[in-house]
Image (tube, helix red, strand yellow):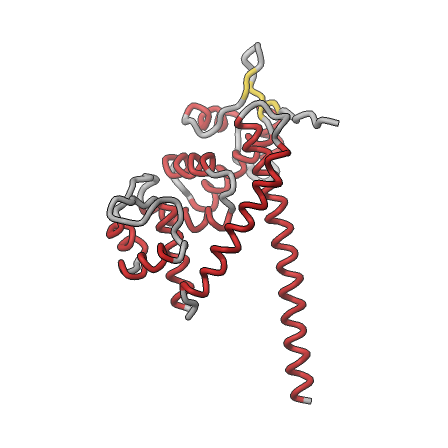
Length: 240
């Protein structure tokens, strides 16, 4: 049976959000709508209706404003990036936030030299990351331009290298991610045949991605605990 989408009035949304964000008001939601941060549907009578994706988006806006004190242009830039890439997760958002804050929310294209300087790495490190697939989306060379997400990636790899983990070690994760993407897409394709709009298809992909990432996170924790426990027991047996 097809699920009927839940739609909320502005009053219902405010009441729901005030449990976590007491300062939220209908006027604040209307202001964010004028600023282009949220686009609720309208009834024939002009009343606003919010779908679950709208409510999720509002929670993200409120978190960004409350936790990070981000100005609206930075919030808008981040939301635009999330719309372009529904697979962008919260960990990646946190890494991207710092870069966006430094650039004032601008998604300006950077040269290799500018990106390396902003990321705090050398050109040699940047080229090594590219060669191993750690900076995807775009061909290597003088004509390539880099965005804030590329800079965030460079910084994560830089920090891992500072811990003694080489780019060669990280190439394993490139293969892993590529394999997961192929598998996720094969799962996603049959799930969107009955959907009419891009917004619905993006919402379905976001739901699938969230559930899969939750599954992976929980499984990872269980297998890590099991592996560490086995290692601890072996050490204990040797020392006995």
